[in-house]
Length: 221
Image (cartoon, rainbow, N blue to C red; front, side, top):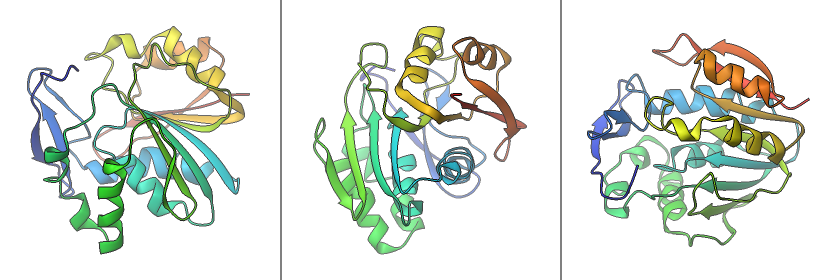
């Protein structure tokens, strides 16, 4: 998506907001529940599966910041270093209209605001033990260090942005993970699963969030 495409705020079925890009006919989250999807795909199937006291996370697609917020909330007793990539950040005036802040305790409403107001390209501790680095970059161009325990792959769908679901991109993700590292995504397309297998991931299909039959999770052997 480029910065000229307009976004509209929509309410998903669990009452949480998502963004809709009419030009692409694409939502940032599931219309069946933005928060429910993020909790299911990235927290339950991702963060909660990493048994380490210090976790390095890489996110493909910062978007609305919902995944980062939920990770900060649910990373109790873990020190998290959260690196997130986004080529076209959502404008702050749009972010301020999203209702995530009203869905959680007041302290997390302030945290959500801070996640968006922190400087780009600089690591900052926004909550005790939660460090975030936002990188404004193209997934295809960034150089990644092989240090991550967990990857959230939350790019727009393959039909919308096929260049982000290629062997090249997944190989980059594979190389960025430490052995035993996990990658998780809402997508369950067969071609995506096979491409991830080709670069070396051990893949599994898991039950999907509301509205989706399946999702994918991979592990680097």
